[in-house]
Length: 187
Image 1 (tube, one colour):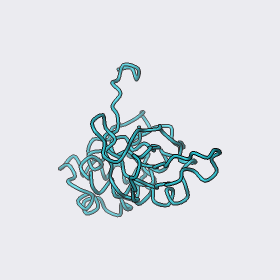
Image 2: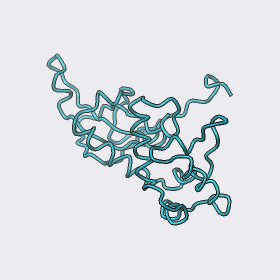
Image 3: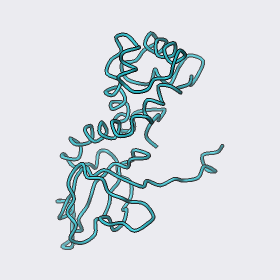
């Protein structure tokens, strides 16, 4: 299927990284609109949102940004690059990504259960930081016996594997920075 033909799915929910009540401090002009920097839950995209008047949001707060009636968000301004995040949003990002992984454990453990080879010499599992050929083969052989149920199951059945949640967090942050050729989670 062509990427052009693929139906575009939108983010439905997002987690607030930072709320700038008076907009960006270095923006010109007298009318500064409040800005929310958030991480979309479905595609893990960084978004810039405009809240409704009188709404105050907190970091780690989940907001609805879908097509229907929105309570806190007026409209979505667009995607932003990781470089445009405020310092506090940048510091919150790893914690929020970890929170997303813990909430949607099945989605991320299914990656370990369903990962396929990319080329003759490279496997999707090898793209995770800290996971080389030996760990890759241990994961593949362990999942043949029985699919992993959660990250604790993965850690107990694959010996000496580094922290799987931490590996996924590092990979997602690396993909958000735009450093990766293949995107496994962001997109």
